Image (cartoon, rainbow, N blue to C red):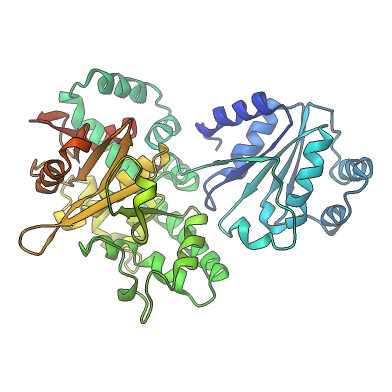
Length: 441
């Protein structure tokens, strides 16, 4: 299936604004839909295109990149090998899985300067950074990241373009959905269970069977495990990834490396975690030591919470050691009876929504009077003020952490949000938002 993706419009902007003066690199996790999106774009926006998938390219194709001194020779043989006629300024050449052929990435500099055609690259889980030693990284390159489908794209996949538009209108009016709220929450819970990986969504549309969707997500997780072992043969990346759901339940205010890997800490695994982040399979929310509008300047790079980039995969990972019928998150979420100790599913969802909407993730903890910690789950910088967010999986409006934080940093606060499962309302100065409004923040 070909799904409508928001990144398509940004790709159009690249084509129109750069007019061949820079290539486009599409980054993203494996199975997030990069290749499908890029080829669909090429079909629609160019007269002809050549797609070179370096995971299966022939020896002849790969050998063309050994010597780029004669571009006429290069283009002539490329057309012969692919059977595609290239048309000057009306064709695009796609380098799919470009991290597998570093010389192709290096060639971008010369190809872009030549100016005859456009170039789009895609890169997957194995960080492109791993295969760039000894080559010249092209400066004539801009990049975009493709994330799993967001809630609006999920609705589009279901054939529903009306609901997202109406939902935005309710947000702009700051008005509760009232009788429609329950349906919106049912839709949101379905999105949380299926997730935004195109293969998971396609399986749901084909079968209407959540067990088959879960099986597809397990295949993707297995693929990630294999790739993590290529990133780090010691298995640390796989172990850190598998422990994400458990870490979010311990209320420690950070991902505790030592509880997952013996005799390890955040500094020792910094390069492994950086590779995981580069793979776009995880999201990192960094602790800010001094919450202010310049959040990146005060982040602690060794103190973070870790989330999955796709909440649907998170649901499967949390109960990966059990068969589908024992996965209580499915039954509890579908029946709207999720216990408090499973509330981390909503926290992961909010992290995914904020990051997909373009926000970097930050949080803050500070001590209470009785040697515990208050925690603000997420902090957004808006203008010259902060917007703190506390996430609740229930409808309760208790928000002690939010109240204490806003009292401590009153001069730095703009809007303050409690994201929960009930309808839109205000509790004094606290704005209580249903989770489906999160992307509009």
